Amino acid sequence: MRQRKGATCQKASLTYNLPKQLSQTINNTGITFEDDTVKWHWIASISVICLVIAEVTMVIALFDIEDEERFFECFSVLCFCFVGFLKFLSLNCNHKQWSFILSNITELEKEQISYEPPSVEYETDDESDDENETFHFPHHINSYTAQFQAVSTFLFRMYTTTLIIFVVSPFVEYAFRRILGERVEWLRVLPGWEPFANKSFVGHVINIIVEIIGSCYCVVLHVAFDLMSIGVMIFICGQFSLLRVYSENIGGTGRHWQMSKRRNERAHQRIISCHKIHVLLMNTSNELSKLLANILGVYFFLATLTLCSVAVQLNSELSSMQLVSLVQYTCATLTQLYLYCRYGDNVLHESSIGMGQGPFGAAHWCLGPRTRRELAMLGAGMMLPRYVAAGPFMRLDLPSLINVVRTAYSYYAVIRQ
Image (cartoon, rainbow, N blue to C red; front, side):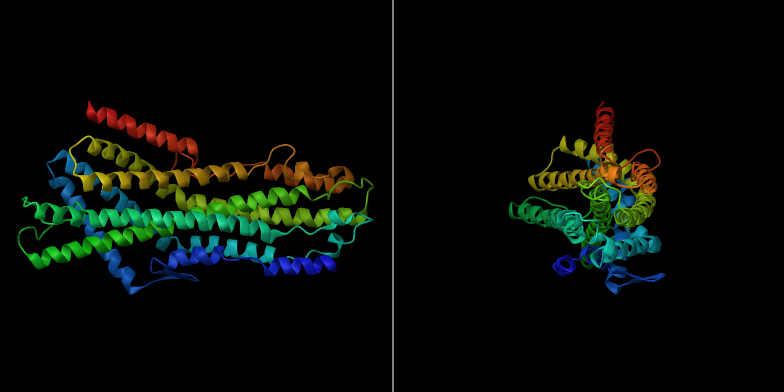
């Protein structure tokens, strides 16, 4: 009874909020998942319209721009906005799959938090107290939840800083040049086609407002989708790490080598729990891979072209504000790529075990033959690695990031020649 009370106290101290935070990131876009439907807030509807209008004007501008430097500038911004729109489509068209992932996370964490070990966890044949100690799931859940909170704060600050610099820099440059008495063109936030250029001041102001709203909502979509995707990958990595440690304790400490029926029963229950967790994690990772494969495949391709176009722009004459905005945008793009590849790489390595890890590191010598077979089957299943696809030809890992940078440099070298 002493240890049951301790387990209850540990449950009460849990900061259980990862599923809630993931749901909140989606709600911040004005999108709400409800059973088999998805609802939009009216602000989200207006913002999407502004984003689509901004993208259409940039597409038109691509065919109308004769200046090479402006062409690459328009292309890089259009790629960013287009990927944001793809993420919006994924959240809406695949809301059932995203809801399935959220329900898996909620179900598993709730079950682990409310876990009440059976009596065999406490009453084993004359085993020492330290072998009977209950495995505390909340400690591991708090660990990867804190990691997600740190990544969430970093991403939010990075995107917010990039947005502020990108939107404010045209106004600062416009005001500065007017003060110097230089001749300047009409103020623009996005490098798109403007139907009211030099015709209507009111139309020009409306166009600027549309561009600002579209830019802000595009960043909101990127933040929500990236936090959702990276948050799920952090959850998968954290649970696989938890599973590895938990499965190593299937046979207890191994100090008592005599066969025991109660010890076998306890090991059998732990094997069942491990198998259930492993199956749920495999289903979640497979679903996430399907959701991200197409979007990340397109994103990796466009990011390669974007980095190439940015390199071309850096070799041209730029104002101070244009240079600051471009460098900030490039750093944000590389950081976004790195975070996806890093946590995709973590999923690949955390999802599989080697010899001496997980069930293979459990005290099998104090278990019966049947329980040993179950332990070996569990270990064989946990040896299979899981990975997140980034299109039909690439995986989400750190070597893919290096390939993107190399390919971008190759494109840049060809263009400069």
